[in-house]
Image (cartoon, rainbow, N blue to C red; front, top):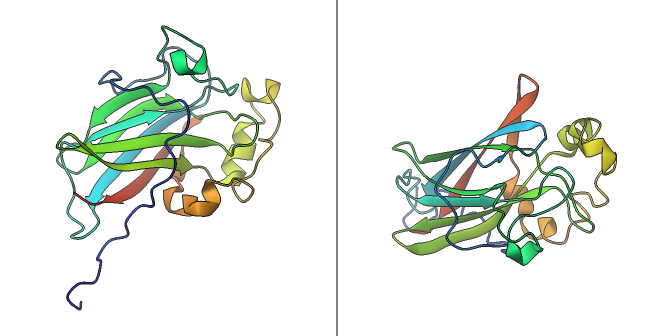
Length: 189
């Protein structure tokens, strides 16, 4: 490989969104009893320049519940922190979360917000997206179908997805009645 070429893809920065809450709890299970299709997230953090796995990075996630509602005071749910949490990456650069498949709200495709911190610095802010076929299958089930059979905004219609969201597309595989989702995020450390 020629000197100076990037070896790994830098994950594009995408908007943090309006529902970020700082200083969330360090925890793997963020469900807090919220109903929905089980989702185990395996999020890998890599150095975009060297492809080295980044261990001990703090990875934060937050997303809405099956009906499109966010927790936290900024979302008019003071005293709640469901579907939010922080995990450290292990020796293989992976942070794992037990959560549920997110719902949707008007004007946005189904997504999960993510922020990565290394050495106390934010090195990535982005969003993770879901394949339409899986989303449609999930939304045919309860409790999602009470909110709508399909999100009102597809990935292609989502203004944030159009700005690089395909790089944050989760690879999903069935796991019983739920899913395991994974993605690698290339960051500058």
